Length: 276
Image 1: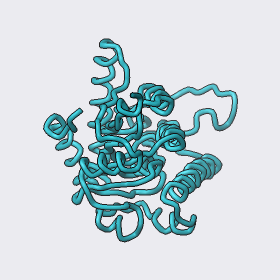
Image 2 (image 1 turned 30 degrees about the horizontal axis):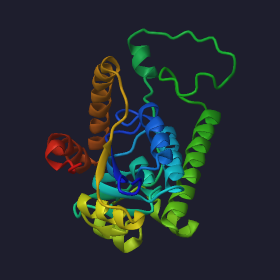
Image 3 (image 1 turned 180 degrees about the horizontal axis):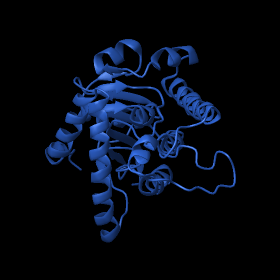
Image 4 (image 1 turned 45 degrees about the vertical axis):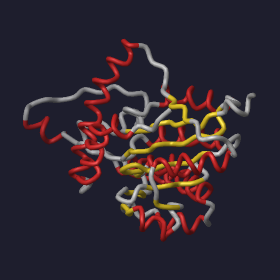
């Protein structure tokens, strides 16, 4: 009877990782999914431009734990970029929509420097700190040479972890992952040619594939993180502001197409949901 009740779990990962897709919400859900014997497989519905490096790496680690116990299939709806692609790489198979984008493998760290502006406004900042780098990244002054080097080291450390996960998840040599790590975006078709994606398809194909790998009936159960109504209300406002800021950054970086796809995904989400 237990086999007859098994389900294919569907988890939507839409939005900026660390803002809309938060580890505090999705971490416990993934832990429960890994241990639940009634969930025969997990399908990830991904539409994300990336986000926090730390949050992306943490969620990818948890997804790998799920993949140790049951089949995991990633479906790329509009985009799986940067941290979004990192999550896709934790799956056994990656299915991407024909018009979707993948890649942007790399790490970026930036912060505004407004020291000259503050000086023109006659604003000074007094700082008392316990160590030289305690205010590293401060907006009110230029970084020192040592701080720039430290920031470069942090970026490189995160990149090495990213490359390890891509090579491990896509089952390719580390040198192949390094060749992909140009920071550029690839169409899904180009992703298939390079090996970054397994096949072109839709969500139905991803669900069918998960059922095949798990040898289970295609009975879908949509997973949603647990959240109180008050927490949900506050988080919606914070996430909306974060996504708006991310969208502006995407436009500045030449990712206007990705930002537009993200807005379209939010508008059409209800009409595209899989039947449970």
